[in-house]
Image (tube, rainbow, N blue to C red):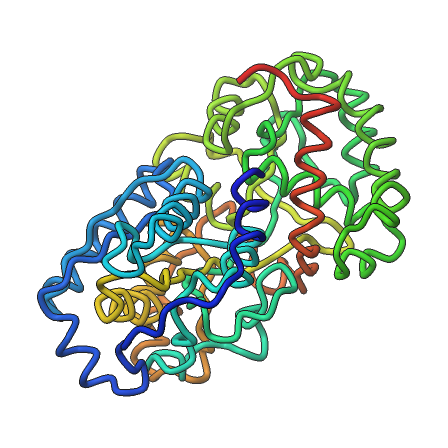
Length: 399
């Protein structure tokens, strides 16, 4: 992406600015009161938007911090905004106070010294985060080093309507065989949509004998050989996709509509609880269930980061800390709200707090943690960038 290339050229020392000390939490709370936090976050889901509005109401009530949700269609828009501000010499009072960010965008901003921090591991609720069992200290293999705070866990699941596809499929090869026997009944969101590129990565991870090669950056020397199985696979899959691969849904949410309209029987999701939430919201039929592949599926944490030039760093840290609280995490995991996985260590919270999680009915389409199994590691972000561009060159269709 153009903005990532520009970022690489902007790695330069920044002016020394006096920032609030994240370890002095009382001072953070005092400075945060009265601040407004402009959280730039994806705005394509009503349930997510509602959760963010709820979080805003809670931090206003408890901490006197105002949250404004700036709804994005692409995280790159917020990255570009911070980049533009830096180019203009605006090193404080950014229009962006916090970003829901992952992967290549985080790696680029971190490398270009555009992030405030480290702060995350000094927040009070970091003490109850599961740092051993969940990937909360790396982001697409890039060390986080306290420059992002995790707030949700995600893992690829495949959503199938058991009325048409009764049994789970165990591998990408099984999905291909089923799609060839049932042409037009499967699709995935059009890259560079995040879920679309995630499907491509998931396919590659499952097709490779040793996916650990994806932990290293993609280069001109290794890219073609490593990704060859993916393009061979897509050459066989694309002709039997929905509309023969001549059109793709623009988002994961559009996939749900296709299942509900009985146009397709299988879809990918990066939220293990999304299907149950959609069933509860009457967006999917109650015959829908989910499965993971036999070798496991890609998983990662969702993070928030604070730009170096935010004028409301204290308020942003209060919001990041609240998002890691047992109260916010339990609400996010409720399939009637979001159905996201938690970042918390259940052994680190109080018995009363754990009882709230234990009481959650995860829904008829949500796999248990044991059924989800160990998540596969995300490839280095350079793979996602190159694969998304390569797919558009080979298969891209009009938006």
